[in-house]
Length: 92
Image (cartoon, rainbow, N blue to C red):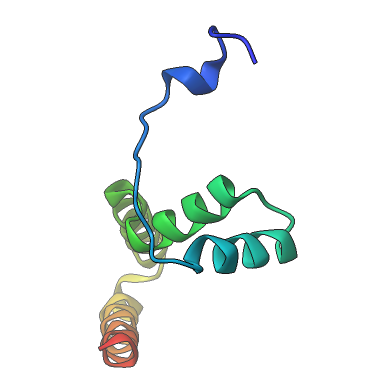
């Protein structure tokens, strides 16, 4: 691999894991047809999603609700908030 490889420009994190954990990660990565690095990136992205993803989803919801007739928007927002409450309780 060349010293000019684009991956050499990425941030790096070195971690220490308990005995056996790297093997467990490798088995899961293999079953997902990914490298250990790619598997860890998937897990980290799930745990630490970009903050803008939530903002984008909220904007999409607001735009969809905004397209509804004015008399239906209140009910739509209530349904959105009710669903968020259910999801919050499911993850608590």
